Image (cartoon, rainbow, N blue to C red; front, side, top):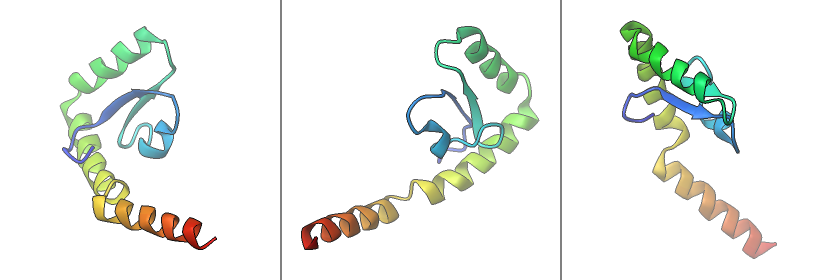
Length: 84
C-alpha cells in the first residue's frame, strides 16, 4: 500500500483492518480464484481507478503501517504488561 499500489487480497485474518475494500484495494472470498482474477483484471483494465485506489492506499498505508507508531504501540504494550 505504501508503494501506491492497490491491494488485491483474500478475506482472511485481519485483512479488512488493513484494506478498505473498494477504496485501498479489493477483497475477495478465500478460494474464489475467479473473483481474484476478476479483481486483478478490473484494476489492470481501469487505469484511472487503479491510480485513485493506489493514491488512497499510499495515504492510508503511511498512517496505518507507520514503523515509528507501531514501535511506540508495542513498547506501550510491553510496559503495560510488565507493570501489570
